[in-house]
Figure (cartoon, rainbow, N blue to C red):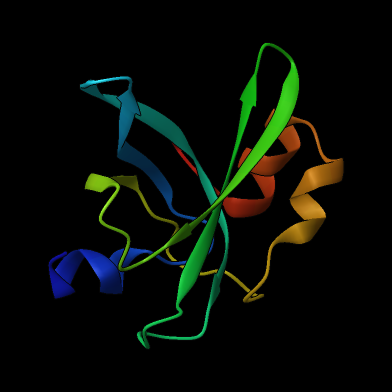
Amino acid sequence: MEAQIIEKIKPGAKIRVWERIKEGDKERQSAFEGIVLARKHGVESGATFTVRAILQEVGVEKVYPINSPNIAKIEIISAPKKVRRSKLYFLRDLSSKKVREKLRLTT
């Protein structure tokens, strides 16, 4: 993955992760769009980032290794100007309207 995109994956950023899914002998790509809650272990081999989305009124979190071969591409949709914390786990208890207010997101 490109170093420029890895640098932009920060807590509070809204991203779309395209992951490769293998079903039998076929392979397809699926998008998962959400807010980055945490980024762990910098850029070392075991580095991960956690993405949270609301799907059918249920909160879903996925933890992706940065160097995973199953990630086809990552799109940065928006990023907040400033976030006061490095781990945004408190967003789990808030509504989507309150999350936008806390992160000062315009989109």
